[in-house]
Amino acid sequence: MIKGGFKGKLLRVNLTTKEVKSEALNEEWAQKYLGGRGYGTRLLLEEIDPKVDPLSEENKVIFATGPLDGTLAPSSGRTMVITKGPLNGAIACSNAGGHFGPALKHTGYDMIVVEGKSAEPVYIWINKGKVEFRSAKEIWGKLADESDELIREQTHPLAETMTIGPAGEKLSPISSVMFNGHRASGRTGVGAAVGSKNLKGIAVRGNEDTPVADPEAFMKAVYKARDILSKDAFAGQGAAMLGTAMLVNVINGVGGFPTRNAQDAYFPEANKISGETLREKNLIRNEGCAECPIACGRVTVVKSGPYKGTIGGGPEYESVWSFGAMCGVSDLDAVISANHLCDKYGIDTIAMGSTVACAMELYEKGYMPKEDAPFELRFGSAEAMLKAVELACKQEGNFGKLLAQGSYRLAEHYGHPELSMSAKKQEFPAYDPRAIKGMGLEYATSNRGACHVRGYGTAVEVLGDADQYAYEGKAAIIKTLQDLTGALDSSGICLFTTFGLSANELAEMVSTATGFSIDAQEFMKIGERIWNIEKLFNLKAGFTRQDDTLPPRILNEPIKTGPSKGQVEDLEKMLDEYYQLRGWDKDSVPTEEKLKELEVQISK
Image (cartoon, rainbow, N blue to C red; front, top):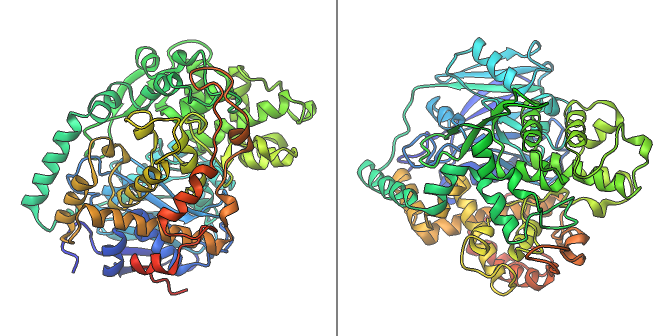
């Protein structure tokens, strides 16, 4: 019996028929997969054909919380968006911070399952459990932050919102879902999945508390976790002071900062776009998500120059890198402006910056006819970078439409897919695998495509004690971290807590909240179970071992300059060992023994 943590209900919304149903959570699934990413993936695997067109009515989009959302657990403000990803057809789960997740719990629901397709643009208003469909005709076409404001004007000024921008409406496979205007579920093209259903947004407001099974033990675990986090160098100090951009000088300093479309991994002008410079030059204030003691979020402004007046959330480390070093740009004001544009239009900043960098290399090497680009696309040009971002966000002209498809489709269009710095067609983030070996294994094996938050190896390889250049032991490290983040994403708590908290502290909060018997070992097993059902989804969708790979540049071209000069990534040194540790065969298929051990039973 579910005793706490969960509200115990999901809301099923059919946009075609406008039918709304409240359903009890499957208790067995809640125990095996928790909520969020785990429960959402299990439900999706049960209810859709993994081969379905991601933009069809048959696909579903799930907005899911975990059992710690809506409680006093630290950093418990995550919301998961689970669907079949439009970017690559793989299982997609993209999460965001903010306050939407806890607010959804306050309405009495743990998650929303969106089905079908509305004949006309709509948004959903959930007010204290009551559900309304409202016309979004006048909001369709508006920017994400404008839509947030308009929906709150029409519902409640304190409502929490999910919206898509024009990029999602126009079905860009790199479009985002935005929460409260600037918190992004950015990866895998989830914005297009929402846009394909003519759903402009969701607003939620409620006043129900989330009960916990053992309040006294839960609060003891919460205070313990908060104390640990307050003393951690990253979570308690660095992230609060400099935000995630604190990593710019750190990662560049070890020679792992992909530069000029990863033609190199060291950016001599990194300090100009660093967290230190951002704090000194542009920071207005810090911002935290629900119950967050870290407050790594930034609100920034451009105070002078051609981009004067630009103000908004971020940029995060990945965005600073993608519009900065990846494009060879050292103008921080231009980077902030590009990030702001992407948030307004609802587009993934990692993918967007990498796509512009890919376009720059195609242009400079003569693979892209000069007449195809409306202007010179050269590395180091802040003006060209921003123009390209604006064209893609607005999907202006053939070139803008092509950029909005992401780097893989762009590079493929010009006959050079190898110049897309991606895995499973998803652009990899700001850690060069040639310099940080485990990150290459993480990118290649990530079920949703290249990703840094599915097992943050950098925490061990750069910020921890592991040798960043060693291959030995990395398969075990990455598997462990992947399992940990699987359970973490299903509990409703932020990845950054793992800089201080172990599976012991996390399991203690989850078990005392839910009443389930979960220790550290069981917490990790939940994460492993989730990783395996995601893999099963992808196998059914047609993915194979051949998709667990990296760009040829990463495997064959040595880093040219900096501390990691001469390094390449030898993925095969780790891949077979990784499959063996996972209990998969050499074709990356989970064995019957492993599925039985994990008690995974899929009905179709």
